[in-house]
Image (cartoon, rainbow, N blue to C red; front, top):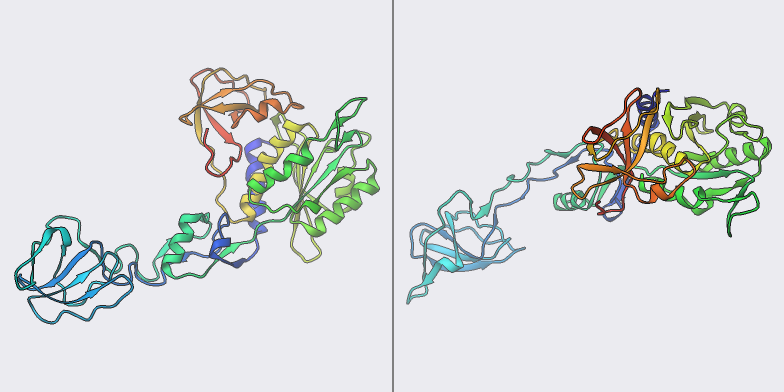
Length: 403
């Protein structure tokens, strides 16, 4: 299957399986996705608000002070010309006020009356009701990512909680009798590198991964595979497996999926590295589908499969927009891979507009991956020269991290 088509199908499968929203307290909504539009519960600001420290005045000067209003208080209206109240930044402007005079632009006469001139200019000295938003106005649509700024807007409006999509639950099964879970590799056995790293990628894409949902190596028998997959799918919305995606003598994933009545959404992708990847939909006992993503056993290929299929699937399950790839300029040539899409590990420049291919990019290698920010995408039947613009498939970065 074409690489872009595989990503589209994965995303659409996630969107089709999205569940209802759930209310979450504001502090806990960070990183989630809105399941309902965020609407203003009142005008913002809800009342005329002073943006200065000074005087709220009525009529011609001089003005006789008749009171004070601080933030959080309500001043009685000014009903007589020639009167004023002292006002603090953020305080409610009293009804009947004609203007605000900054404290630094005012003086007092011998009788204690206030003199001064209101500032003339395009920027008013107070904020009017509805200046930022009007009651019931949509501030953010369904599918918007919730971050601290969104939480702040919601709090300003008066929300206590937000309706957000549930975080998908993910699990991981590691296949391969040749794998070690500790110690130094040798004597025909290699250290498992996917069990420790895949949960971190899944979390960065918005899934929750309980430590108990990571298991393996699973014994290389059909019975063990079937039992492990069935148990993992009972607890998770998505189960990732590593290895066993081909049809070798100890590759039991495909027979296990057949036994479970799975429907293949993607079964191998025309991409290098990583082509023997798959995504299947498995009927759940509650009528809601579960998903299994088969990642190849080679580490870099597994990560490519994860960001090819799992990332768009999880975006869909969370109600987020389909991922859109930015375009960057490659600083060096990148060879094509015939009729397959080539994903070439690369590191972004400081401006984020260029990318340089990195070394150590074999399918079984991780050194190149650890020095990269993502992959340059070279479409089938093409190759790239230095200076060409290419799509860039980014790896999920730490919050606030930049190249």
